[in-house]
Length: 353
Image (cartoon, rainbow, N blue to C red; front, side, top):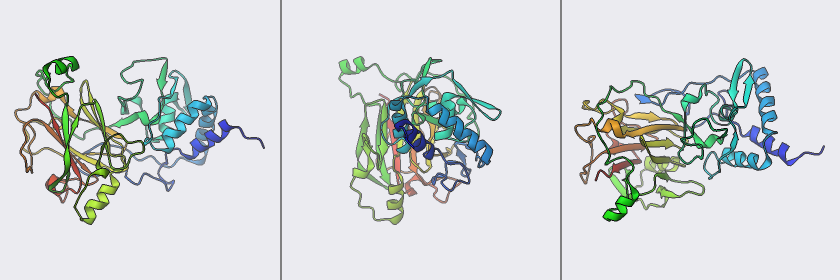
């Protein structure tokens, strides 16, 4: 039987759909589940019955076959690389609805459910990445449906209390022309990579609004931890280092600094603006793969009386920082009490001048 290229692309896409619980292909990093102190919440989705699975397959095939071949290739590149390869936007009509059983979904939501998050319930659970053409646009006729241009929003178990608002212009995105005229360096933060109590490599100065920090990323451009020379022979450090994979994306946006977990394993974050500023001990927040969290909020930072504490520093610093550990957590809910006991971690130091 003659088979078109389009049909072949559709079949490959369906085979690359996101697994649900019971498929035997669940995300090894634990995208769903619970544990830890304060984390991005996600609920498990039960394996669908044969009827609904067949209905979803028929509906997905029907929609994909209406998409242009070039667009199918873009979608396939994003899905098969799990977001590792740079893929362009997939602009499709936003008003098209699809129905599975009694539930109706917009075209973008259906593709996000099929190819990334089967447990996705509402668009309010999502955050568009700043690299996307549709970022910041409201109700466009065409919207990007690339599932890897989206992330899940990380919810906190206990919301922090209200904050007073103070001007934080020195942390918000600066006027690039003013910086050039004053002759100041245009970096908005520097990143330090640590293995336990030892800093590895140089401080990485960040000028661009977005930075990828990774160990192994196809077409990677940014801070590659895999290229740093480390003398640490610890088996645990080497194991965690290998699990960093696609790592994280650090992005400076109008409302704050966001961290997107691109890896297959959880990351752990401590930031003064995620908790009560009067607390003596800041909570460590667990962020699952595919989730984003506003790691630093400009307005909330205005009420802080002090920068967040450093449990360990060889070179004391001033200013606001965020600490991020790959794979392993620390704090009151973990065996490691201090981040300096974590195998692989980052310190993000913001430029407050």
